[in-house]
Length: 454
Ligand code: AMP
Ligand code: MG
Image (cartoon, rainbow, N blue to C red; front, side):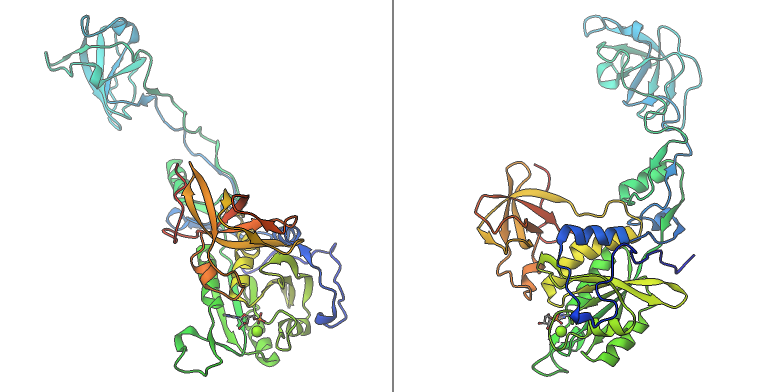
């Protein structure tokens, strides 16, 4: 099983021109939503493996996890106080306290094993098992705390009759599904899984993702600017993609920054064939140096679609490379412009890879906001404006463009809180118009993280 990728080309999607040159094919110009659907449907989860709970955060469950226990295991107290019989304290107040005999003590892990009789109380701590015979817990503040006479307690209020008992099984019952298959494991999920007795969990394997950046002008940021000419620019897409993939819990692997040469590209692509997925970035448009499609074609690439009605990100492509003795390798071709690469990664590659790793939830959270300034779009395309958010959940969010929105401008993504969506049906949004913003956070303390509390 291991190493196999259960992703198949879709037989219902005809190859546009399987015999011809890639660049001669009609582009699909898929609507954004259809491209996303096709990607997510093509991603069949990787095989399961079992991992210790301590390594499970961020992974997706490969099977539903059922509880090995009923929780709470005993009715227990929600308060520090005295377990009592409610009839004994009926009508109690400061003028007419009810005095009870304290016959024992119950704390978590140290129950009192007797049976409570009328006229008796058991000192009880939060989580302490409720003794047989008790039907309520009087909170300690409503008593004299046994100060007058040790071994006796005066109850000064009867408001807690029948209260503060956490019932057996209130949390979860033995055999009940604690988390369904496909659920992403958060730190909260770890609490639940540990609570129901799991030390190991079945999760989908992490995806091995190869990244190929191409462009004669690109150099490794580590060598920039000292070891290269004026025409060079640092390869910012590879580190950004490695970081984005890392945040998804994948195992990213750079195939290097490859020049626009067919032989070098072919060699790099071949070296990435053992990965679960190949991401190419750059060289995917219509320019003379855009060789990626041609090289892929030479390796028998089966195109699913190329070019989408989204901005930035139009020249996005998706298809499969055949592999000997293995399933075809999914290839996601990203435009080289850093903003286009970033946006298509976040909105198309991310859901594909999350589904590959078994996650049922693959979309980012969104908030409703109002535009701070007017923005324009080319009708018929879904436009994603990089924005910062100000305001609050209570008073409402305002989305303000990060600055110039050119698809080569890394400053527009470096400080963005989210992507404001201009739908295909609109060519402009005016100040104060409502807008949906896709939140971009992928870790603790991301810049400008809006506080979602009111
Ligand atoms: P391409 O998609 O190869 O036509 O590239 C479009 C633009 O993005 C060009 O200006 C490239 O220099 C730039 N670009 C391509 N790849 C990268 C990269 N890895 N890092 C930074 N800029 C890039
Ligand atoms: Mg290029």
